[in-house]
Length: 434
Image (cartoon, rainbow, N blue to C red; front, side):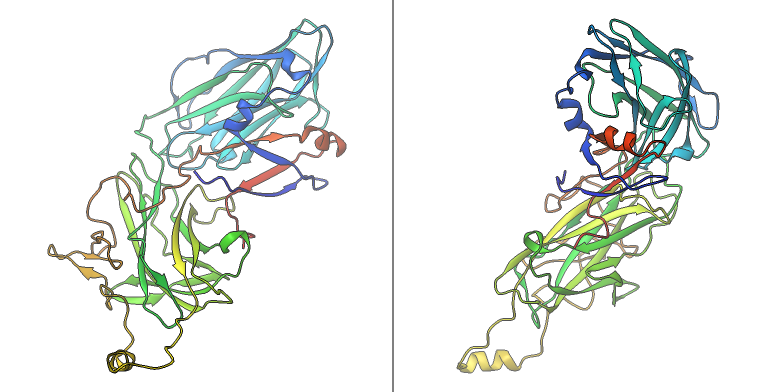
């Protein structure tokens, strides 16, 4: 899993508030802030305790917070929703409601966050982010009702809700999970790079091949087409970024890949319904148009980031591929007869490069890098075998529940803007990244 995250600006209904987001595993492992350590949260079993049909009946569970200290403690209830499977989950795909049992009258709101959802509840009539006061040695309780909408992803199998406080972890907490009906074998999308080129790509030098692979191993299919963007990241966190020429092999020829920004290209969409073990491959050919000031051979990273077509949210699956780019080769001061012959020969790619990806004995084509084995690619562009991602690839964050964030240290900012509710977005290597 890549550790580099890019947090988007926090947007409120009345003002912008900056905040820091923490991955769910790090948040859960961190120590509870002073005061919150005295709180413990218990979630009751759902009733009815059965799988939830998409668009069908809802289920409810109790949410109880207890204060073991001898003074009142502020509590801002927060439920983080993670879904297994392949698709991100949107707020309009989940029903969410909270009512007070032994607590002040309550309002609630479900937010889209990262690739999942987060539910907040707060005193009715007050601002979102306003705290409930849990009396010393006492408790507050609520009834939380959840349902799966008709649009809940067909390739996701469950929804898990984990309790916390908006301002940090509490002393102890709990979670509750809802299975989806009909049940599916839910697995995240796999994204990886294969046939990584060996050697250095230089201006005027040989091209190199590298493939991007997508595989949907689980049951069900995506309710929208998949959109994959390839981004060239700056080496060393901000050094010169070379200008690459990127071509895609389709319909018997190499064609320039559509550029959608500086150092960013858009692969052809994968149609709606992709799933059930289907696989897609995108054979790419890379050349260096301009080394842009590179003075030494430098490893640069290509990021393949997958999102649902037309969605404004972050990519839900991504993987990195690494290539080495260098400055133009220096011409020798004097040429031997053999070198002179080589200089007059037509410019070509590496030993295995050709107009089309190399073809193996079975008749399938495979983009091949010098010195590496080819991954068979069919005429449809899918790798012939269905084994696990190649060891040469770098499988990164995939699936809908990976690194779902929790808010950290944002409660004070929320209170400062009164009734405004901060919606803080997170994405890996968003469009603002260079």
